[in-house]
Image 1 (cartoon, one colour):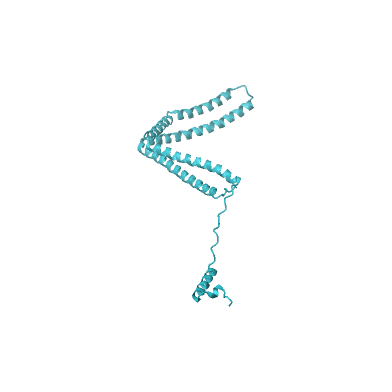
Image 2: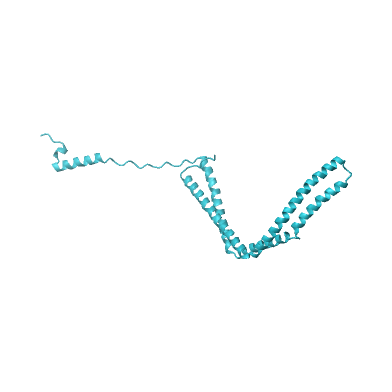
Amino acid sequence: MPRLPKTAQLPLAGLVLLSASGMALSQNPPSPAPVVAAAPVISDDLINDFADLNRNLATLQEKVNKVRSLERMNQDASVPEGQRAAFRKAVSALIVSFADDGEVAQLGQSAVVFVHDKIAELQQDTHFSPEVRDSLIASWRRIATQTDAMVTSLQTTRKDLSDKLELLQAKVDFVDQMAELRQARKVVDAIGDVADQRQAVSDRIKDLLAGKASPPDM
């Protein structure tokens, strides 16, 4: 008696199960293999960028050190006191120089006397021909006119500056606050430099790890 195929010998329920399993496999194909990311290409440009990264890291550390130094100066009471003393000394010296009988006034008068004496000397000089002497005298007179005008202007502005310097000297507390604000502004600027450099270093590291060289300078 001929034998039936094995599938024909199975019970009806088993045939139904095999059929359903086959349909499920045909409707759900196996998942594709995961894509493996390609290894970064280590180019010459990438090697050069690594050297640049070393320099950027050193620059970042320098900027951090600068912030630390400025903050240490802010905490050191002797530093602002020394700065205030130097400022007051400079103001006091300028007040003396710009006083009515001070160095600046004397320098202006000396310049005026010098050019007018040169004109008087040339008028009595016999070493030059009359034509040459007249030409030299005309040149010195132009210089004398310019000198007189500049010294007159200086005398006016000298007095104005002298009064302002004396007022500044009297406003010691205000000057101290301005000095402290200036120092605090330095700290803010230094912290901003650190933030900018940190971002640049972070971006460079990201590109290096991804095998991406920096674009060439335009």
